[in-house]
Figure 1 (spheres, helix red, strand yellow):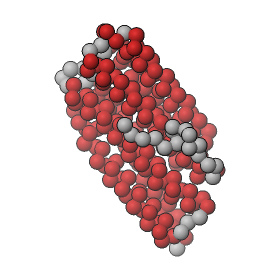
Figure 2 (figure 1 turned 90 degrees about the vertical axis):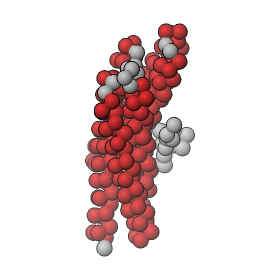
Figure 3 (figure 1 turned 45 degrees about the vertical axis):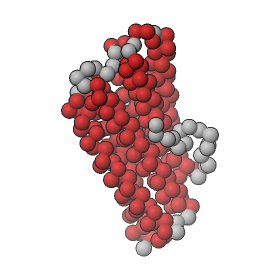
Figure 4 (figure 1 turned 60 degrees about the horizontal axis):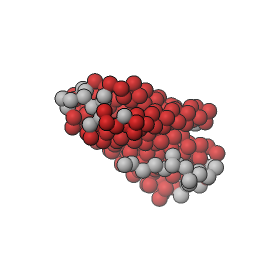
Length: 225
């Protein structure tokens, strides 16, 4: 009985890692679509989001079933509670990648990014992909040292978002209303995806150490826009 239970826990962990892989692909593709104005890639991101939703449902149903049938305690209970939170964070991160792709679709065939902002968004995309990739490794290996790298990348994403916002504030007259709207939303989308990666690794820290998460931290559980 316990062997079957722990096999189910491993299945949940494997599904969470698969969700990370799919989100990583979604962010990479959404960023490519944003930088290149690639409508076909944007449409692929939009279409793929349903698979993330399905994986979240599978994880949540299995976790709730195990909570009801097995009455887990200690580490096993923390694993299931964390899995429910992490599946939600990953689904939201996937939605944010989809939002990036939807902006590309809405503006096509016009480019979304002014030339002055391309480098910042290219770097935000790279950092977000790396943060989610590392978060998957943290889930797989419970490597809390690697978790610190995810937090560092998130801080860099925040700085880049502020760089974009600063440029909008100081040079607003050189942007159209549509560009200001798009850049404000895009900066927020990447910043939120970084926060979701941090939320994932902090949840792993919780299940490893049992230490209570800081409820005042915006990255403990973050809401989608």
